[in-house]
Image (tube, rainbow, N blue to C red; front, top):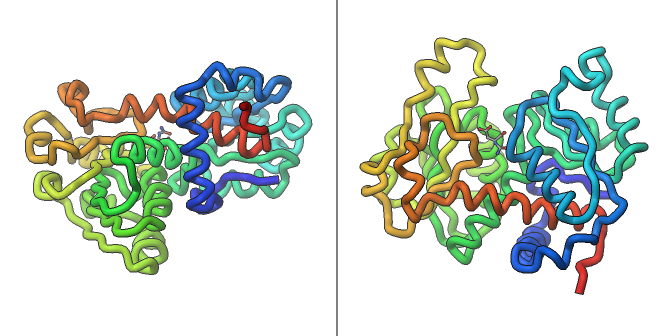
Length: 307
Ligand code: NCD
């Protein structure tokens, strides 16, 4: 039985296979509409979510399966003090696969140790978010046709932004990928990303705080929201929340083929005037999230690809 806790749980070849399958699903959706008949997905969300939970549910429904679950800790027995370990043991009797989001780093790992079904980490605190990364990879591949030879700018909350950590871990495996890490001093990537991922893999990167200066050299700009819920005090959040706002004027500094990604939700960091720019790819990215999750569910459930 396999789980997905971290992007590195998948090899580069497996990621290629998932993206190929997701593209086939995109173009032949109806062919897949019964491959998970009779299977159930449990969505165990202890933290708010729109896209991740609903794209998982949409993915399973598109495959002919059903969904059950909870969308906040308050509406589960966590409110009564039940442990993640006990909850997942019980859910293993009710469903065939589970996607779990939890505010604590490592929660999905604990769940996987007690689960009788595959567990997918749908975000564990400020740590990792591997299915967002699969979505991001599918988007980058569709836009650029490759994962190699590119400069990726990551901008915003690089400290608490779990999607940033997962995407960096996944992208360092491809040749000649460089990073420009754009953040205020307080929101730089955690030291394990700098030391164990970037430096350990001899990846070219720089840490800067000026978006305008970085823009001209980027092939991809990955914008992120300042993660309000992970701040210890409101004052710091208020000071940092509007540090970067991507607008039309700034987009003029970027290459003609530099695409803007964002895991969403956006707050103020991308002005709505950018939405009509052909380089704004964040809504397409959200659509890919359904196809890649369909491919992932099929793969973890070992469902055969239909002919
Ligand atoms: C992200 C998350 O929850 O980590 N969103 C998502 O899953 N699409 C990013 C965020 O909340 O800012």
